[in-house]
Image (cartoon, rainbow, N blue to C red; front, side, top):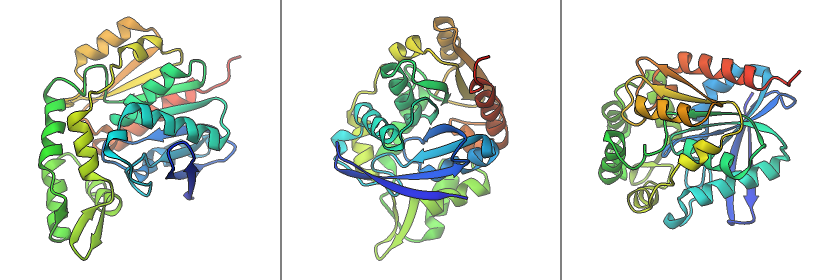
Length: 282
């Protein structure tokens, strides 16, 4: 059963939306989506984890059902502050954390700033340099420049997703239509702040993730899509060489959007890792 809630963030003045799945007495787990995604993107992972975990998925500022903000605030410092405030709101002490892409960068920065706080960490398809150089970074910038703000109808919106994410399953397409778009008198528009997010992504320098990678002090799994243009295998190897807490897995047939493209394999890998990593030490 899914529980919806919101909390008012006194620091930012934003109302942020949170979804909860699982057992309230289970191991707490916070889930952070990617650049233009939404909390519901984690539903199948939460279902796989079942009653072992209590999963909290945050609609990060400017996305989903959370408030939009000034474009200049769409950067790691603000996202990490929002996460800090969510942790305080939930009253969590130690917990596990999962993040995809932008959410992965935010999760790494949180881990760096809060040593000893995390039971386990999972980072999906991002590493140092991913957002700055390479084919994937250029693809994201191109998408930010070219994504329309409105679509004439649902058919046009669907065609956009099928063309831009050819690896998406039918279930993934339906999820994007349902949770990232909405119908208005002007046509089909984004639920997230597409214009503000694009402006920030094209103007704000991504955070350097190497200090966070070197500082990791909990079991950490980096998940790479086998066809990813965003996280090179060489970066995975370099991270492992820097920190022995890091493990890696590559999932065949998946692009940068591993949990969408190969959800069953992604969910199994992450669930197995989290269950093992979150066990109390004997």
